[in-house]
Figure 1 (cartoon, rainbow, N blue to C red):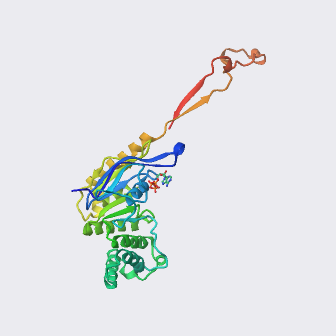
Figure 2 (cartoon, rainbow, N blue to C red):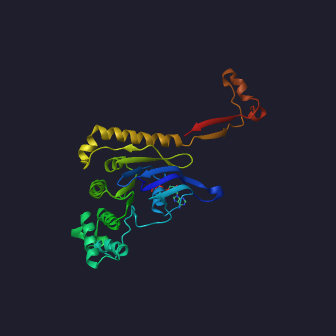
Figure 3 (cartoon, rainbow, N blue to C red):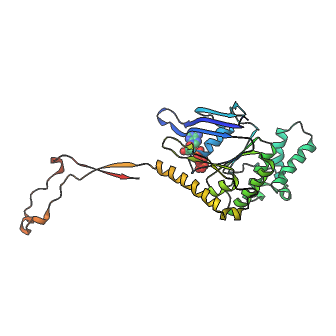
Length: 309
Ligand SMILES: Nc1ncnc2c1ncn2[C@@H]1O[C@H](COP(=O)(O)OP(=O)(O)OP(=O)(O)O)[C@@H](O)[C@H]1O
């Protein structure tokens, strides 16, 4: 079976000539239909860059990004993306925000079908009672539910979630993690979920892949398979030995990668141009009649090297 998504040797650099910065290096990723993949990494490692390459908002500097065997050369409705910051239209209600996407993508459906389709997705994210409200009347969690509904209503083949819950408080975050995982369980739309939270990654996904920082760009590390059955009951899963082992493995991988890339700075310090006197063998009277200090520059200049991380 052809993978739905395949990245091979993807490298992404920004800037020009002498100011070239390699953010991603040699990234390989294969995603199959129905996969729930989470990519986890430190802030600033290149997670959004990676998702933007998949979304077609960026192009690789080297290597290839393919969807269904074709090179990704721009954004498309088959790849729906949910960003961290909701991006809703403030002058439209919950239903209208979702409906806008439905109208644009399904112009051939009747008005009634589009209305039903909209209502189905608003309901899926549990917002039917708030369907007439405007974004400013919603909590952060509710706004992000609208974003998810709007993206899912477009029937994407892959749902790309770029740290979708990171602006939310821990409790709302937990509720939404469970809800999105539940929606996936029922729909089986392929999901790539970007996060910086090991618990989140292991609770929602079946495959967790660390994005490891490197001296010359980040790259994907070995994946961790999460075989915990669904629906995952948060309280039980968090307590289980299996979950704790996976988390330890994941956190160690991330910490080791960070340690390996911590810069080792060698500072060269020039010692002062004066040599210490040995006062132990001086008599008190000679202290008033001291010769000029001996200069280091009269000897061979000496440098001290210290290593700091
Ligand atoms: N268009 C761009 N031009 C230049 N540098 C960029 C561009 N986009 C991203 N970068 C750089 O690439 C690096 C990775 O950024 P990216 O946003 O992908 O990281 P991230 O892992 O998503 O971070 P965070 O978790 O904080 O959102 C950063 O150093 C960033 O400054």
